[in-house]
Image (cartoon, rainbow, N blue to C red; front, side):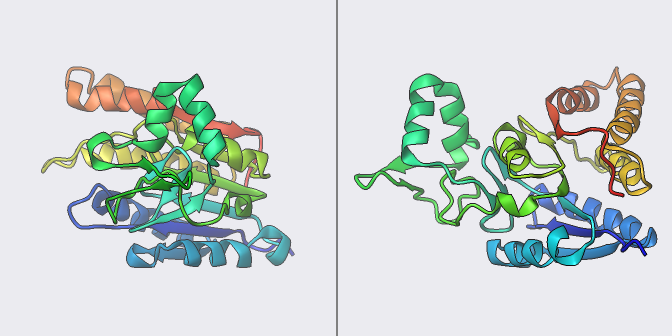
Length: 264
């Protein structure tokens, strides 16, 4: 008998932060996942730590459980990591030499790696050739002290709303054996107002998840998402503060891997 797939879902949330919105999106997505009979493991709020996520991925690897694995993350991201409430939870380490080579060859990429949030992030190369951040709770320190764990996404289908993560982490996930990685190579944008414009952006993310969970391939789920996305862009084309972020997200979304793969 085919075992139901496992969905590991990381859901960081801070009050007054964009994750307060994406957390509510994630909650509704989890309801959908459960209604379709999937095995769901949620890691929420303060529990979104490197140790907890690493443990969950190890315990639910397809090689251990015999179940397909989907990993979803609704939260912040950086070029080389996905971010929980206070620290990176999925990470690829950058060596000093690698960073130095990037700095020489592509200064713009280097700035995005070490300072993706500009004034909100910080870095300093010290005498020991390590990267230190002077802000204790900086969410985008590029040189996480945690060891690389992106390889634990081997054989998983990965879907994230995370900014920048497709730029490097997604490529590494694929090299490490992930079946597919969906993320954004630039900042992920959404609006928020009292009329609920944020719901438009949620519906687009949920459309991909729903199609995938109902058995469609990555390619088919992407097409369903784009169809809805385009419909919203046309509908709100005269309301630029909605239409432009929709178009930006569409242009900067990356899907790596075999688009013909499905969960089962």
